[in-house]
Image 1: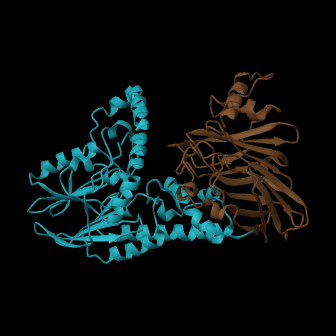
Image 2: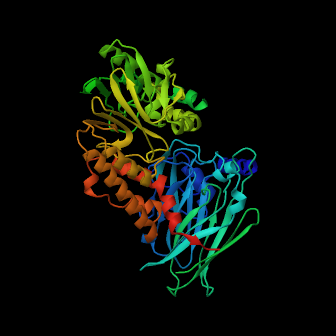
Image 3: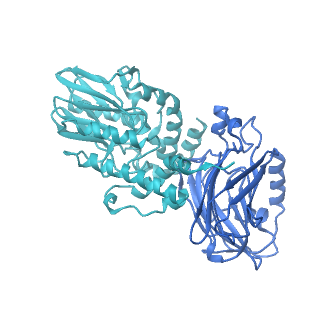
Length: 252
Length: 311
């Protein structure tokens, strides 16, 4: 973790851009550094078509709900979600293939911060939207409930969920049991789900997502997939950073 | 503790703001609601530096032997100012304090009542011991220097529900749950005053950080049977009839039905937060804010009831 932080620090101090960054509508001093860390391969524009829904105050800093909706942009390649002032800013990277560019989940917030979604479109431009989430703080440096109770291992990897066949998409919502330790609590190393992939039973690739430390304990995620066959059973597979593998199937 | 030091520093940097409330005077004004019975009515707002945390109703009953105090407010300063205001009404000693539940706006004035027995339900005492310090830090963050010197002090006596005669008042202690795991209400049979604590919010949207909706509904049904003349809710104006009770029940039932339907329809928390709220509740302060907070508090259980094992 320390290495990663040092690396980021070096990286930020060396950041110099060949083009002028657009002015941040959220007026965050971290914006330039966020761009350098996560988006610098492509130019960025702030775009109201990228909608980030979250409460303005984080009632529970361990579980801040968020919905990202970029469906007004049409086809997108990648969605990066990050919070400027989190000790670990990066929250998730979503790659919709046959899926709407929308997702919902909960994450941990350490202090008041802009929460942003950067959406990469086919023309190679990041479209960035976001909002400030206020917080009394502490979400990233508190041990998970599973650690405090000590029973997390009994449930690790259990998945509970459901698939809905809606008019515009097949929605899948699920909870996966995992402590999602940030590594910022003394004595508890980072331990989190790194990647989840989704496909139909027929092998049609739907989407994949990379998750990072700020995702909440026992994550609950929501996706809207658009498989060719609306009656598809959807398979999930994934792994955490300790090599534990997870699988689940959702029947409509 | 560190938080408080930082906060004190921050506050001292905001001098123009600080001078606005330099006196830290809650301007507590005892209002008589029925014979021998007074309340200090708080604002129907959220915690801010501007209101110093005075968003709660506290009260007292003047018996022939002395004073019975109900809840001590959000801070040491509040508790001290409460005692001063009580002494302007009567010179009788304070006999005892009852706390309705363990939320910080109701008990953080305890320090001002040192040496006087402070009664609460067992569940309330346990919860104050577990969560009191965290609550206190949080309030320092939200209302700043109004909190100076305030620490979480646990009640000194466990109360069993039942009737007690105090200086000519037949006072019934009622033990419930629903808003929290331990909700005490006080019914004075002699005057007809019913102190409900936060089991009833009136013209202010209820809060749910420790709520259990079905228990809360059962509790209100039981409270409604008490032949009260005046109801003093935990937040908002007094009520002379059962309308405030029905309003709370209606809102709780609506939350339950709405969350259940949302979970069955597959809505995420943020999507549920964006749902329209019926007009019938629009007379309650902080409606949108509290509804959103309640989603965070309560929706996860509804989601999990819909999910099935998938591996």
